[in-house]
Image (cartoon, rainbow, N blue to C red; front, top):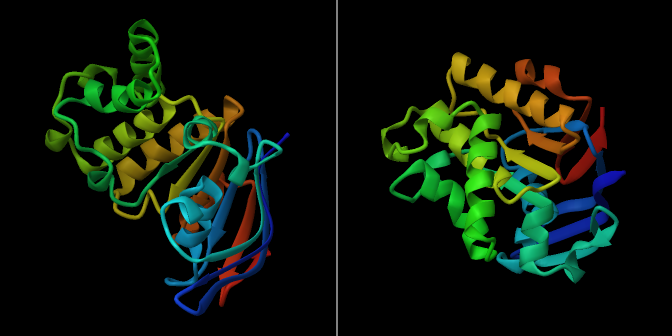
Length: 221
């Protein structure tokens, strides 16, 4: 099944057209990468596919965006975050709780998930990223790579079927990059759809298909 799909996307921000007739699709269990020069609109595409645009960022958006067959504009915020999660470039921008388990629990708590189920999700999410032993740590005391793994786990706690990585590997050293790529492959094996924005071609080995975005034009390569 197609998890994320954008058709004929045009996005204009402050009179500048960022995306021009962009089309992309990602199926369940598939990893699709988007590359392109800095400032080409890659993050904008991530925000559109995750619903951040137009929900939280102004601009003129035209075209169709679907999550698992449903137009994203018809979905509530709660329903959207249960279908697609996003992991950003800087994990420090996502982590704010005093302990790792508090961080993982934050999303499900806001969706009023029962406490027993939240406990189960904490264990499951941290298990997927091999960070269960750090459950009671303060995220601020972790390495950059460990913080990124916690940010991934926090997204997984909402049990989305699609995940977007917006240059999530760009600030990591080689060892941390290998760990995150291993998690991405693991998630693919679980049927989760992955969209990864990536500037380093060495990290594209885990992608099943690659798109390039330049001057607002998105093309599969």
